[in-house]
Image (cartoon, rainbow, N blue to C red; front, side, top):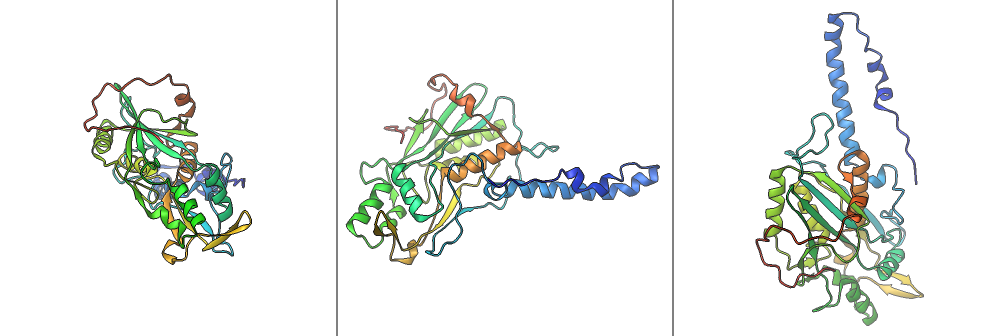
Length: 331
């Protein structure tokens, strides 16, 4: 991991801080504009550090595999997609710290199970997916009275092969564009209620207001869950939509540039012949977890992983669900 050492803001702006000793009221008045300019610069730099993806700041000590790869001779690259703005214009923030605030007892939790895929090379990614073809993101919406744990699940492999199985099947069959299977939309999506059958690798907690709680709850009850896809309408997309309603934007998508073919296990494996399948963008729990951990380190939200893992078995929620969800299952 690359460690980046930065100076405190006091040292970065030492010339202004050396002017703190003022001998008269007139000196104070003359100094005020300089201090105001300093405050604006500090706030601007703070926003810059908050917006930059974690992987470009100092690396990520707990990330076991790479989620970024520069363009390589075979054309492969993997680039997390950044965001233009961290907080919504109407976000509920503490004026002093710039961090989210909420009403007592109201929280949004984002639970993430990273797939830990290795994006450093096309071959390493293919091997990672073959070993562990899934990740998952879901959420908890909490009020002083109730706690609802839910998510969006799909790709169950009942009507059609699951995404990774479909790609590998097309490779075996010699299909000209095996990767095109990832462009398909499944129609086995479902609304997941309760804990999935695997624990999260990270849980992030954010305070919200009662108004945001109601917005999020109504959105989840009205949202369509029947469609499920890699490029959209998946579990991570649902979490991102919910976070946006809470007033925060999260880094979660990755752009892969795929070589047309690659040698794997001693044989040449074709990915595509049609250039429209050269670039694949999608939401992934791997990128999302890096961003959530980075936010917790900055004091934006908190790490609630230990708290969640210590919870007893959940009870059924007290509030009614406003829309029926037949055959609820989890991945």
